[in-house]
Length: 138
Figure 1 (cartoon, rainbow, N blue to C red):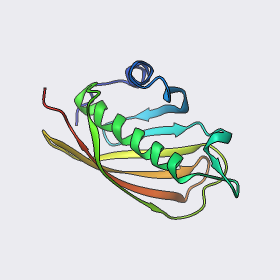
Figure 2 (cartoon, one colour):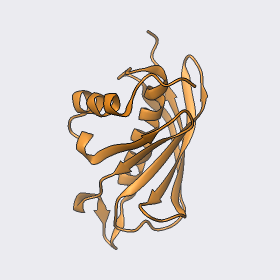
Figure 3 (cartoon, rainbow, N blue to C red):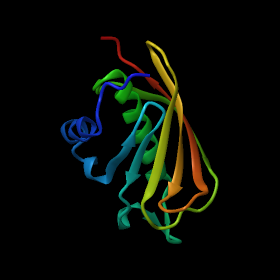
């Protein structure tokens, strides 16, 4: 799939459209197969027990797949989540999280794919999310 946005364009887009969270996420890598995003974990992302909270993990999966879709369709702000299912597989370390998003099918109306979540620096995933996004008509 051809890419229509660069990493820099995605960062600018987040600053313009989602200024309230843009500094929480950093796009690290992008190619035709995968987008890698880091959740810059702070104290507000942690829950009792010293682990990253489920809502923070959902946010990373959602933002990663949103950006992976936009990289392929361009900056369409009204692209929205229609489904997300997350399997939490192990307790994440209290550090930054990495999301690796793949668009598995891109149609005219829907984008379907997944995101693997990892504690930064660790090989085994902490969660796996399946997502579907609705793409707005032009």
